[in-house]
Image (tube, rainbow, N blue to C red):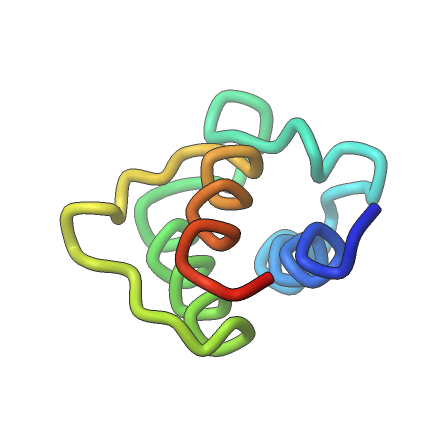
Length: 78
């Protein structure tokens, strides 16, 4: 697990504290019961702060750990 992956996993565990570490990599609204629109906005906010990036409004539909990981890697020097 690289640093970006670990940092993003930490963001997920902040927003979804009941999510087991082993479940983070497969997290999506379909697999995480508490993932609703409010949790999505909160998660985006936590990710923006952690990685010092801005997620454009049209990207707010990032809907899985994998899609967010790809987005973060694309928009940071990580």
